[in-house]
Length: 91
Image (cartoon, rainbow, N blue to C red; front, side, top):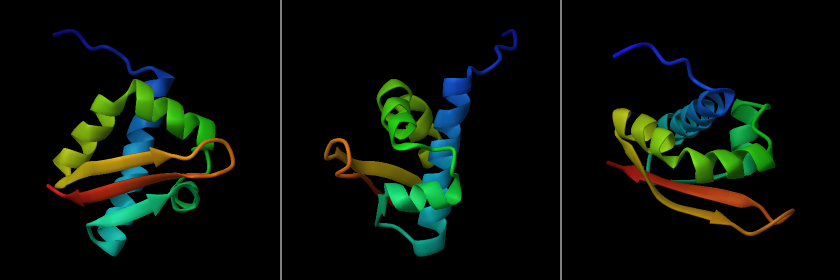
């Protein structure tokens, strides 16, 4: 199979998944992770980018989480200014 370079959106989705994994590794699973915590790990993850990456590239996020022994239990988005939250559990 020929090499296919990742788009910037795919790279950012992998960065989001890595930030979730780092938080879960630090605090253990199950864990609820808010947007503030994710932005501490990677300031380039804006609320808009997080929402878009979750909707467009959930497969990448799920793959990275499963590789590290986690799975995404729930995602909630309360709307602009109200916050987003990921719930991660052990695989």
